[in-house]
Image (cartoon, rainbow, N blue to C red; front, side):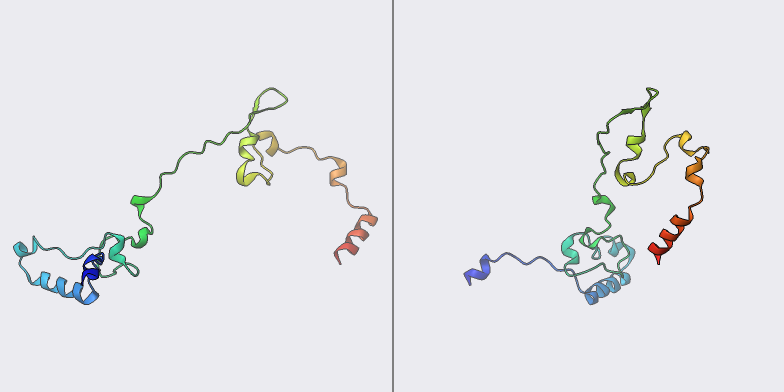
Length: 142
């Protein structure tokens, strides 16, 4: 009827496993000259993977739903974040602001050689705790 004529044509479905095997067997029987014009099914578009994954019996690179397709990867652009320049006490540019942004914002970052060199410890920093401090800690942690 007229409604079926107006309906959009259905997308061509990928051949079934049996059809692909039969086509490969027929192609193998042909001579080299007869094989030149014939081609087997090779999935390339999303419609070829209509209901699922790749075809393991077809030995070509396949990207169902474009998963892992290296040709479609977005090009990464360089970050253009603005970082304030800080000047330290000696008048030199301090690059700590660059190092301490992003994932390092909550971490202690040693960006200068002086930060990593051994220093003399203050007596109050290395003093043993008093007996009162020990008792308080023991009560708190029990």
